[in-house]
Image (cartoon, rainbow, N blue to C red; front, side):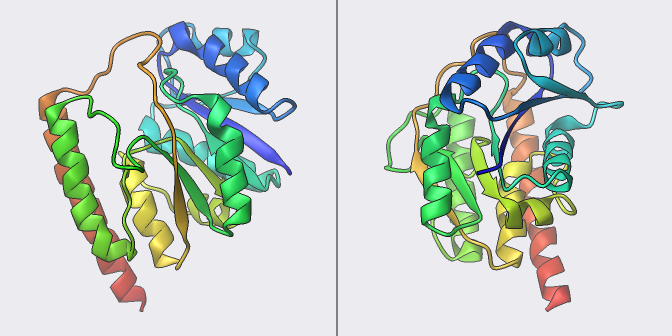
Length: 233
């Protein structure tokens, strides 16, 4: 199994060492690539010190640009699988083998680590909870199945998905739109229940106003993807 673990990061100096070492313990021997989105702190140096390779982006691209850069490189280098872990420590790398097992056994293109897959989990804020419930309702008829944690960035994908994402991936708030991109290709996904943690360092930049903008932006992106699918078909 040729696996690459990617960690998109922006100003994660305080957590990145621990995250990398946890990944190395969870999937020994798998290369770890930190995609640094022009961090203003010592994220790159900390990542290299912990034993990861670093892809420094020449311009600040945002989360989607970071992730696509990792997917594109993984595809071009011939990797069969990619697991994505956030650099703030909220995802537990010990769950990566479980995601990969489902990815292989279920014959799907993507597996999502979900904090809400069994109806449990606590929302970090009221706006986030309302947003997730809204996205669930919008995505259910589009995807043809329920998705419980559509905003999760803890995912594993296979080479089929890598090929698609290396050419087409949402640049902002990518998680939800990526599901619609997969659906256009008639690809399938599964969710695996995971327990998420508090971020290890730093503070989230998500404010109530940004949450509102996020919902509007994502809904427009989903609409564009639906119209694109109809135009192709």
